[in-house]
Image (tube, rainbow, N blue to C red):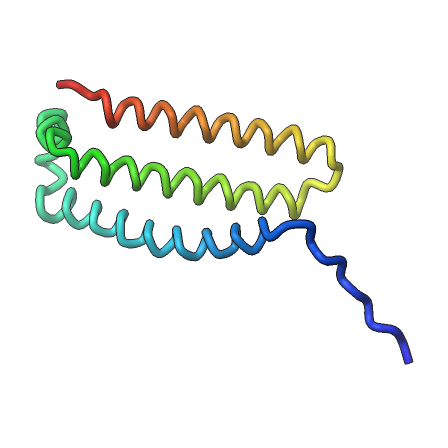
Length: 123
């Protein structure tokens, strides 16, 4: 009889939390993006969307927060997905650390710039 291979126990629960976050954020994004599409394309109409419409929409703190949450969930969800792909396909540890560092820096910069635009926009 052959001994069963034993998987090493992970040092942290990062992968579990990452897996769970991907499922929750996908559901949240489904509703955020779905409502965004319905409102912007069916209620307002594609031909009515202009700078003035967005400026008027962002006068409300609700819409600013809504857009910020959609941006945040989308970027963190995408970053987490890319991190998983890197873990699967990039085997040398040095390259993986370098590319993940670049990924995290780019994601952070985009989130900060997006938040800056959403919260400081003045028409």
